[in-house]
Amino acid sequence: MNLERSAYVLHDTPDPDVFIAEIDVAFDEADGRRTTMSLVQIFRLRDGQIAMLRDYFAELPSITSDGHSS
Image (cartoon, rainbow, N blue to C red; front, side, top):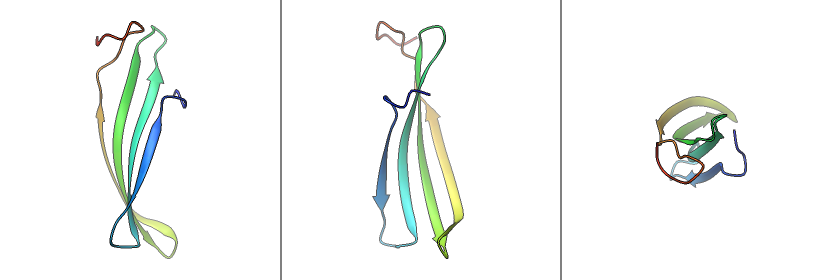
């Protein structure tokens, strides 16, 4: 995992016990390809603990070290 290229955004909702996280996790493959997996996670809290987690994700195309899709 490449932490320098990974990122996240947290979103509040009208319900104070629910928040949404948009996450892009970047990976540098051994063969020079770069892959990013994008996730959206929806959290519902109860008594300060995670009561429900929904996880949605999609893998983006690999990017070669020269910046082209593979």
